[in-house]
Image (cartoon, rainbow, N blue to C red):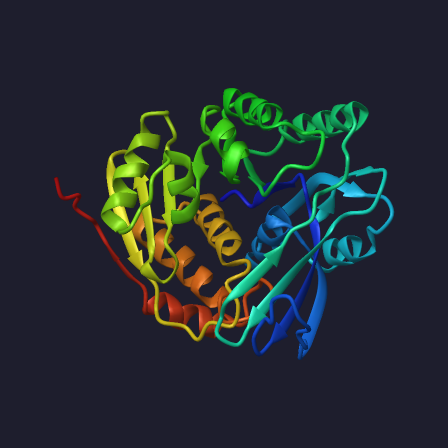
Length: 316
């Protein structure tokens, strides 16, 4: 029987307030045409997509006691087991302004303040879940009180327990987490450039940067490059996927959807090229909508058929 149980970890979730507008007038008034407020955070987004794909999802992380209602409603809707540690305060609200051109402006607020007692409860929860789960997705930024080194220690401990950790973060959290040997990472080209400390102007330069990470013992390195495609390095083999052209509504959640597709594909033991084609198509569909989720199986199958996957050769 194929694996369907997975834990998604969102240490710093958010309520996403998304507004659509013609264009953003910086320093002045901007009129929003439509807006939504929904429970989000990278790991929460991954959980929603995985649940729609058929996974049995447990969600955990830190959640403010003052405003858990939209999260509880979402977890009930997607039939996810709620193992979040509730802490004092309110979960943050992040603002995302989506212009008609497709440009997105993110205004991200700091998260809740996490205490040592909160951390102790979370660690107890996480490693209790590790007794009967093999796949863990740890995604997103860190709240106040959780250091990059502490987060990395959780990745390292799960790695030592032979758990498959998909780690998707950025900045200091990414740098520390890479040293803990997660099973899969998915930086985008900008995050990868920030990590290696130099601009990456094309796919070849992204490949060279990814090779530097391979020396750290990370089994799967996936680099997302937006409309240019996705690169995957595993066991010395490169695969490159080119997504179909989509009418872009919002790129918010596309990376999270890619992580969900990669996780599900591995859980289902998909053949590598089919797995990358599936995950790329899923992510491509995400940019055609506000929020994450699978609009229809028919659209997904059409997108899968339009993804081109090939082995790539690094020029010397």
